[in-house]
Image 1: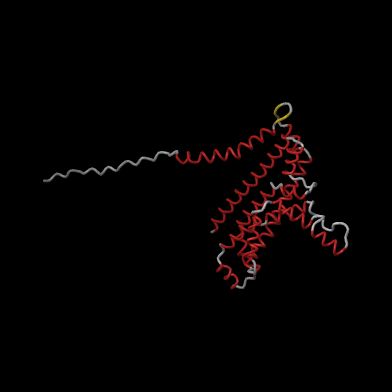
Image 2: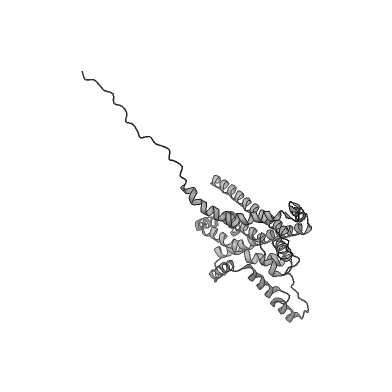
Length: 297
């Protein structure tokens, strides 16, 4: 009788958990340090300067600046101009993107390239162009005076908040047109043809098919424009609008003209806080919108 010897199961090699590699962390340290040095250090210096008082350090400068009427007026003027400019850019930019994408006409390519060209120009050139056209001694007033014999300028809005808003809309509208055009380029043409074949009017196709696809691009472009207009200084300065004092203009006045560095640092801190709040709000809203849209799909 043959004895059966039990065979032991093969021993599988022990799988050890891979050790944590510090190499990715080491690779990310240099760019993080560079960002902290470029962005974090100046912000820290500004915050430190804002607490400087004649007798040492404290919050007296913050209380004086934030409690002043000049700060409240500048804050309201900054936010109102930025919001109005952003709304104007969204309306005009959406209209231009729709025309360029869905209404072919001779020269549409040239118009698109001109819009791209505006993105490369400094903002003060737009203001100078407005001055040459709509200033009190500009071409439009000169033409009106020649035709009607008027001795006083008929058009005189350039040094008002309306002039600043129109100049900002002219300069920042391409920041809305480009992302919206990119969103329209990804829209399937068959989807538009099906909607039109079912009897939908062009306005209904635009409202129910085209614009829903452009909401992320509109949100991105509008947030960028709002952030840029909140911090815009060149257009306000070159329009010569002495009564239009925004936060960047007030920072310039406090820091350069009157050499009140602690007061300017307080205003700069508020400006940074506004920008960071806007950015974080956009990131939060966009993340919620993306999650809800992916669940709906």
